[in-house]
Image 1 (cartoon, rainbow, N blue to C red):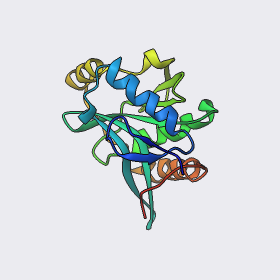
Image 2: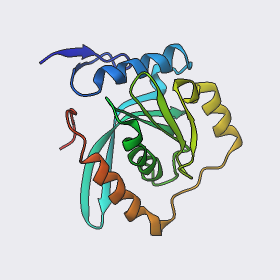
Image 3: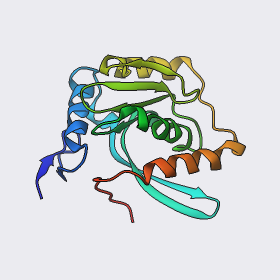
Image 4: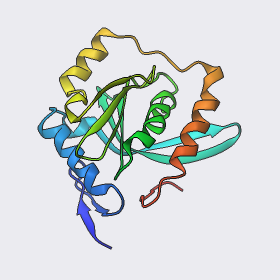
Amino acid sequence: MDTLCDYVTGREVPNVGAEENRQFVEKYLVNTKGYPKGSIAVDYPLALDLDGEVYETELDLVLSVDGLPLAVIKCAAASLDSRVREAVAAARIMCSSHQIPFAAVSDGVTALVHDGISGKKIGEGLSFLPSFDELVAWKNSNTLTPLPEDRKLRQGLVFRTYDSLNVNVQRHTG
């Protein structure tokens, strides 16, 4: 199997699915948007309790400020529009303490960036991905809110439905 060296982690990863696209996004985040590599989590583990059933998966990229996750990026090979609901649902459920304010889908050439809480589109294009400084400013001037309890199961089911359709991905979870 063909492999690549992950730009952020330095580890060898299988070159399957959207991996080359993810590598481009990682380089763009570090070199253009000013992210320290330590603020980018690759293959962020996610375990959801869906009414007693545990669903384990990984999120492609999670961007943090001082260890606080504030953006999630789904990397895809094509059909970005069809991945938006998955990214927004992930933003709403990945942290029990708060919803993630930014959700994006990228193929390495462009990006669809949405407000992770409202789901509204912020913009289209890599330039709409928040810079590290913009994420710091957002953190310092906004209050994070958790997803209401009565919406957690539904959003988890939406996420699982879309995530389970992903093919050509390398999972590290059991």
